[in-house]
Picture 1 (cartoon, rainbow, N blue to C red):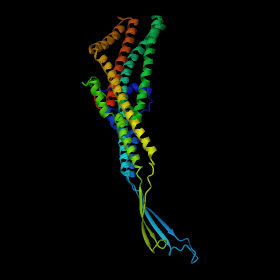
Picture 2 (spheres, helix red, strand yellow; picture 1 turned 120 degrees about the vertical axis):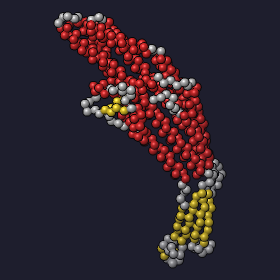
Picture 3 (spheres, rainbow, N blue to C red; picture 1 turned 180 degrees about the vertical axis):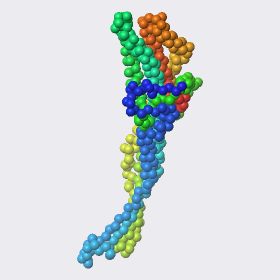
Length: 415
């Protein structure tokens, strides 16, 4: 049966608060189309495309016109009919500068793609972890509300009997203490649910309260999924697929391209053109060609080349750090998941079923007077703690498994 926490959230939601039941797959689909942060990140790729286009554009040719301002022989001003020069020049970039700039721009586009991929993975992982938290917190709330419903009715009956002198006040106080403890747990869980709801709204762009549509059998199947893969294999997959680490490697490549581009600036560029002179040259209507090139007496871009080299070396060290950090993050995530999963698997399902049966039996026997109030409240307190811990354990297993998926960027664990 699908878990419904609609009624559980009514106490923390205004009457006008809209709610919507959604599966995890539906949340993922809405996330990909609605998440504003992800949509905004796509523009960085488009900007990188524009940089590539710009790098390919040639410098514009330059045309200049010289006309007579004052003719001292004929005493005329602006005598352009008898004396004018026209010159057109084009800068020819040498040393492969343009190609190297394009290559550098292309590496920046690859970096923008990797940044987008990493953001998509991080946000999607956050979505899944929030969904799992909402589901298991809802189950906690369901159990607490079931207990509170019974205990609040019992407290009202005790108050009546206390007022009549049939029951000691200390019994009523003991019952109130148990209810206060449960209400404290309920407030904490409700606040966690509200935070999860707020996070899902931001991630999906949906303003309604999202109710997890996840059956108990589906949750159990995913929870018990334990793929046979070693820590070393997980670390290798992370090294191959993690976009954050790939970004560090691509940064080295980008910085090398930038270094090569900067070195090309030490090759001087050529300026060539044509010049027409009506009467200012050795001949009438003279047509000349022009060539100009800086004299490479020293390497004018030496400082930028050195800087680019240092940046490249720095990025290599950063990549080494990123690899070491990634391996340790995978190790921590794996150990965390393994510890929690081992603890969970050591719990016998029969023991959990017995716990539920005993609790129901305690309620029935308490109604019949076969169990004292002290015994009942003590057991109820232990039962509540066990239920909360069990659901928290399941939630943390799912979250740590998703963290492994995020780091390796491989669907190691089913979701």
